Image 1 (cartoon, helix red, strand yellow):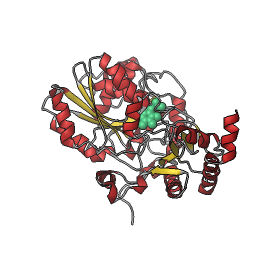
Image 2 (cartoon, helix red, strand yellow; image 1 turned 45 degrees about the horizontal axis):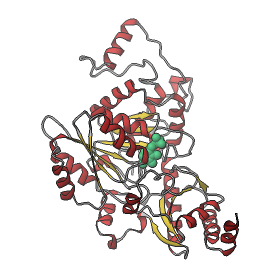
Image 3 (tube, rainbow, N blue to C red; image 1 turned 180 degrees about the vertical axis):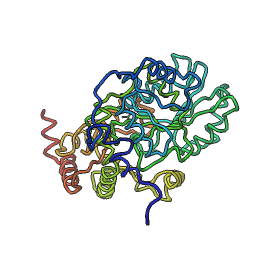
Image 4 (cartoon, protein in one colour; image 1 turned 30 degrees about the vertical axis):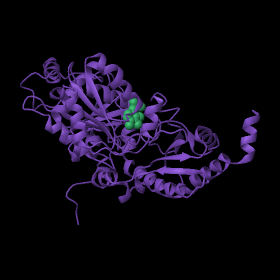
Length: 428
Ligand SMILES: *Cc1c(COP(=O)(O)O)cnc(C)c1O
C-alpha cells in the first residue's frame, strides 16, 4: 500500500531543499551570512513592505533580508519542524526560553490575565512570576489534579476573568510527571473567548514532543519547545521553537525580529541534522526507559518510581488523561531513593556512564537532583506539596545499551546503603 503522504521522518531528509540550489549538494549547506543581496531596489522595497505587514503583499513569499529576520537554513528548518506537529507554520529561536518569552510577549498586554499550570520549568516560572507582573500582567496558577470547575472558580474569584488572554500549560510536569489535561485547558480558553478576543492555549511540549504528544491536535493554539532537548538531541546546542497557525506565527515572528531572539545559521544547520534521527532517537530512549523503570521498581533502595508507563486504573484521572493525550511513555523517570538528600547525593556521586547534569532529551543519559538543582528556587513547602522530596532523583534516559545503564545504576545504588561508603564519607 502506498501511503497518502510521507511521514515526517522521511520528509526530514530533504523537505524544502533542492540540491540544484547549491551545486547539487545532497545536504542543505549552512548559509553563514548576516545579510542578503537584493536583486533590485524595487525588490528590496517590496521585501520590506511584506516584512512590515503592509497590505497588498499577503500572498507573496517573504524575501530574504537579514538573518535576524530570516535565513534560508532557518526557513527550511521551520518548514520541517511544522510537519511533526502538523502545524501551518513554525518559528525557531535562540533558546527554549526565548521561544517562551517572545511568544508570551507577542500576545500579553498590561491588564491581561495569564492562567498557567504548576509546576513550571524554572526559567518560565521566573518569567511568569517576576517579569510579566512588572509589565502589568496578572498571573494565576493552578495545580495538577485540580478539576476544571475549581480552576474556573479560582479565575472568577480573581475578579478579572474577563481579561483572561492565555492559558499556558506544561505537561507532563517536571520533575513529577504529573499530567495536565490539554483538552480541558483549551476548553477553558474557549469558554472565555469572545468575538473580539481569542484566549490562546499555549503548551510547552518539551518533555513529550513532537513524537509522544501533539497539543495542536488536542485543541492548543501554539506548541512550544526547548529544541535544546529532544529536537537537538545531542546536548550540543541551545535553541527553541514555536508552531501554530500562520497568523499566530506571523505575530510571534514580528516580535522575534524586534527582540532579536531568532536562532543562527549554524544552530539551524545542526538542528536540520538532528531532525533526521528524531524518531529513531526518541524510540530508542523510550524503549530503554521502559526497561530501566521496570528494573528500578524492584530495587530495595528505591522507594518509589514515577514513570508514565506505570500509570494504570489505580491512578484515576491521571491514567485517563494519559490514555487520551499521550502516544508514548516518554523517557523521563523520577525516583525516590532511600536516605533522603544524602542517599540521593551518594547515588549521583557514584554514577559512571550516566552523567550528573541538568538538561534532558540527549543521546546520553543524565541524572540530577531536582530539589537542589533544577528546582532549587521553589520554596520548601511548595516543593513538598508538588512531591519534590529530598530523595528524588530525575533521570533522562538516553540511547546507550540498556544493560550498561542498568549496571551503572545497580553499582551506584549498591553504594547508597553500603556501610563502608557511609563510614568513609563521615570521616571526610
Ligand atoms: C529546558 C527547558 C526549557 C528552556 O529551554 P532552554 O533551551 O534551556 O532555554 C523550557 N521548558 C522546558 C520544559 C525545558 O525542559
